[in-house]
Length: 62
Image (tube, rainbow, N blue to C red; front, side, top):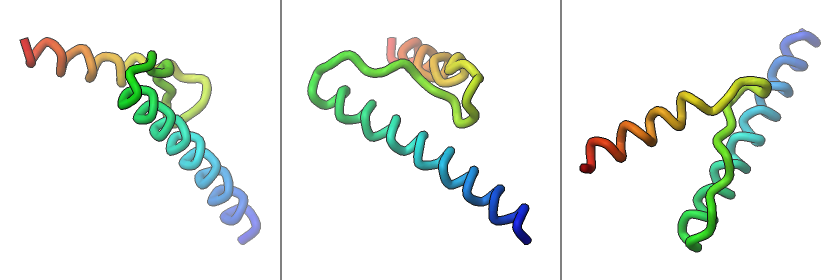
C-alpha cells in the first residue's frame, strides 16, 4: 500500500510539472513572447516528439 502511495505521489508531481510547463507555454504564446523549450512527461527525455508534431502541423498549414 505504501509503494502505491509513493507511485501516485510521483505521478502527481510529474503531472503538475507538465501542467506548469503547459500554462507557461500558453502564457508566452498569447503574449507574443518566445515559448519555452518542450519538455516530456518523463524527465530526462527530449521534446523531439512534441517538436515533430508542431513541425507537422506547420507543414500541413502550408
